[in-house]
Amino acid sequence: MQLAFILYKYFPYGGLQRDFIRIALECQQRGHAIRVYTPIWEGEVPAGFEVVVVPVKALFNHRRNEKLTAWIKADLLKRPVDRVVGFNKMPGLDVYYAADGCFEDKAQTLRNSLYRQWGRYKHFADYERAVFAPESKTEILMISEVQQPLFVKHYATQTERFHLLPPGITQDRRAPANASEIRAEFRREFSLAETDLLLVQIGSGFKTKGLDRSLKALAALPLELKQRTRLIAIGQDDPSTFKLQAKALGVSEQVSILKGRSDIPRFLLGADLLIHPAYNENTGTVLLEALVAGLPVLVSTVCGYAHYIAEADCGRVLREPFEQAQLNQQLSAMLGDDAGRAAWGANGLAFAAKADLYSMPQHAADVIVAERA
Image (cartoon, rainbow, N blue to C red; front, side, top):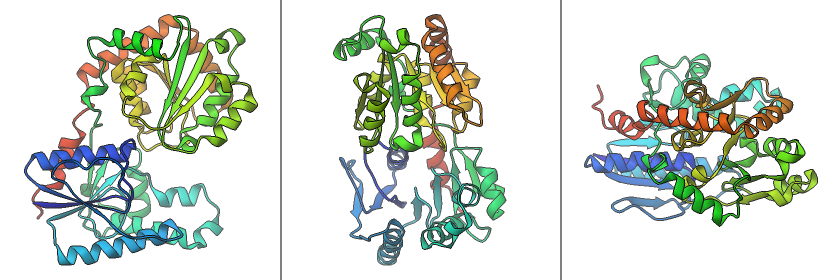
């Protein structure tokens, strides 16, 4: 089959982008041809991929999306394919990978009525409806079971069109046999003493991921703990606001904010705790990457994969509604409990050995290339 994949932006460190590349490679390994449409491609192109960088620009994202959709539609008329797979919501898809939550639900519950009068709202609502409306034929790859009822509520989407995927953690995130050596080397490189504690927060979109909450929790630690705790945040985002916040809180010397990078497994092995107090998060792949690396996790319950942390007993899940005081207390308790962190880490490794946390690309490829009635 000739397959076309569409996404609004490709860069090597985004969660959606990494899922896309693994699914596309799985399809390619099964003998299918891969064409990719995107207005932005950063990084290497996998061997055998045809990447079409679509030449569209606009002042507003929703206008750019509309131009992109029209351009791709015209090109597909000239060069047809067997399946069109989208990683963002848009019309004309055979398969949609649901990396994002329900836009309509957020618009109705988190925004005022005036917002729904704007052109931006109409665009994203129309594009979501094109995927989930009952008259649509799009098959839907779900990665968060908590979102499916919301789509059904707003669109009455047929249940049989949803395909719930297992997580897709790559095996290189699992703790290797020489994990202790990697940890020791990492901590030497970052000048971490034996008694120092390292928090990591990983993920692009620092605001959504709750980096402001993490900085407040770091600043609120008891003095003895705070003096030996560092925080490294990693992601593709503008760090300026958070650097100013760290300075205002008096912790700027203990905080490093790094751009996205390819050696995340080293950070997971070298750290003492992953903190992820997100405001909203469809899944939170990094939670499972920490779990399989044996790194304890402190996470807000709104994250789609937070339930795995509770099931594996490899950290703590914050109650809702979120309270900063609860995060502060839990962070202090976890950092101050060396034996507890060791037990949480061991629990994560045991869970990683028995649970299916890895086969998402294979299941997604099954749906994409399946025969249609």
